[in-house]
Image (cartoon, helix red, strand yellow):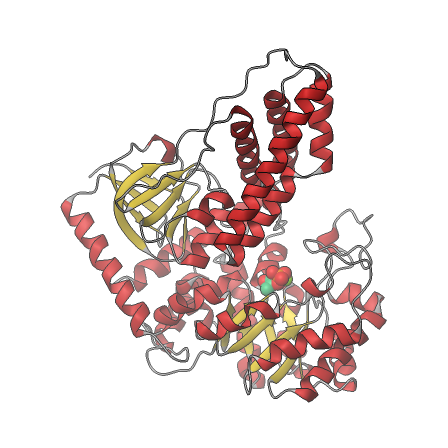
Length: 552
Ligand code: PEP
Ligand code: MG
């Protein structure tokens, strides 16, 4: 058997196939002095930037779904006035349009990379736009996804949205990238389309076209030139996973019949139909930030109510948990957050920001109560970033006063997990946001690439806090949901149930895999896995211990 390369697996799938590499990027444009006038070069640049934006937009329209949104964002990059000005300045200094575009995009890219995290991962998008504009200026084909007749494993540095949107999924067996983390576009789209993927694989770009590899997202391993036994084992696991996925239908439950309702995380009412189709038993987290983004003031009660009614009508008789506006830190809103904060994640965010702007909170709760009265979904409401018992009392009192019946809080801060028994004495339910809980437990900014390795919800310290909330839930008889990304990791989902979670909420595309994994284990086994994970010293050890206990 050949080498085993390692990266971060997305999901639990496994695939065997031959490598096909993304073509190499265009060579860097030479830094020659232009033979044309600056005005002529500027016109060439303007025309190619505009044409590229139009082509990307057209691809987005053809692709639809979330690809449309990411491609739209990419088209905006080609139209960014600051970038276009920078191209002009470089042309005025004697550069060709090709060189000026290349340099201006590279400078902006470096800026994004220095910001790290989510912004850093957008650097690939910018490189892609730059390459497309330069190709247009040269009159050559834009670099892009290969389209052979046979199935293949696509190996690339990192895929740009323009590439992923056009992938022929019937031929792509798996994705392997050398760059990009769990929040890169490759990872997001792999999750959404259920493609086997391992990202951030050192050495991936040395894989030769045509060589056979096994891509195992559960372990993050990429096995080069597998022997017969390894290939056969991988093929039979792929077949088992496929069978388990199609066999697991209906409501979420463990192997012993313990129900674990599987709910959807939604960011707007537009995703509701898709969530229902994928078997969501309700909504565990409705993020309301989209109602407030891109506007200078809060939306009116009427506007909000219309959106809530649209959402609730998609889930008659089902539970829908709506989260009050979570502004600040990774979701800044100009009219709510003070930009002068040095550590916004520790500042006036979530419920703290709402409390400082109580009329906005009151309007939101009123709009939701009115929508509740007009529809027959089971409406729950919760506050984000609650860190004290006093904040819990404040929020539950206000929401109940404004007519909401089931009022809870998100547990995203260690203090709330540690005092969950007292919080649940007042709140009707708790919902654990593992993204923020991990950030605050490990003291690692979730947006900062340099500390991304700390952002792992398998960490025993995070799981211990989840266990505290689970215990408090059992003691008070109140529900404890999980709505962070952790719930979408199938094996971790089993551990979370073992720690006391009573429902799991995730992006709809993750529902099938989580449903299938839950059906494999009993509550007793889930509790044993939880014990194993809790007794590990690190996230890596916890994941390895449970993976090996769960592997037949
Ligand atoms: C979380 O923090 O886990 C969560 C679900 O909320 P968000 O990701 O929106 O902060
Ligand atoms: Mg959060």
